[in-house]
Image 1 (cartoon, rainbow, N blue to C red):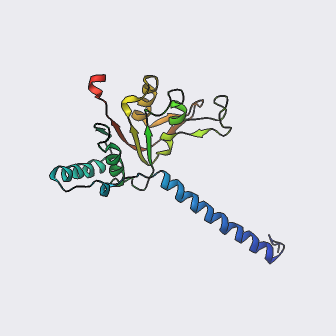
Image 2: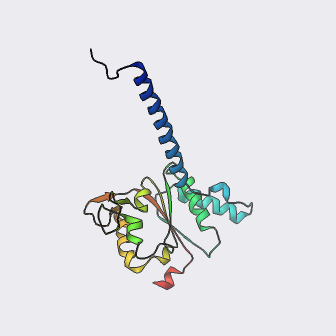
Image 3: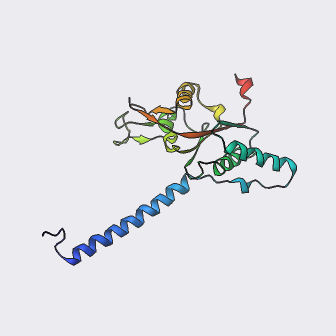
Length: 194
């Protein structure tokens, strides 16, 4: 019979190394989960008035559906708070919550940031490619904040992803299926913009 280890010391050393790496993976998984979690929940919505209670009830009802949700309101009214609460009350609460501020992403980087890119897609691209923000939302909630400020050139590509739940990384011909609950918010009057 052959042994994989030359001595008991080698076996102990490998076992300790495996335990160390397992702890590292667990710590990184916790950090990633924390980074992809909402900052707010239903309990973050304070107040006891009738309108606040009705608002909370409405959020819970929408959270239980897979219907896309558009939150409209002026700056500072708590759109992100509502989006976080929707996620926390949904069946996808254990999944990631990916928040993208559409107004803050430079238009030149919009596609590569949201859709990701394939290895070697353009000069300066990481050799392994990059996962996009939308793909990170798989099995969770995708929150598109300031959706009314999405660059016009990116709107058609974004619409296709939202309708078909399939995306192509920049420079790739391989489709990637993504499964997310869509929540969007804006302070713009979208009807007037149309």
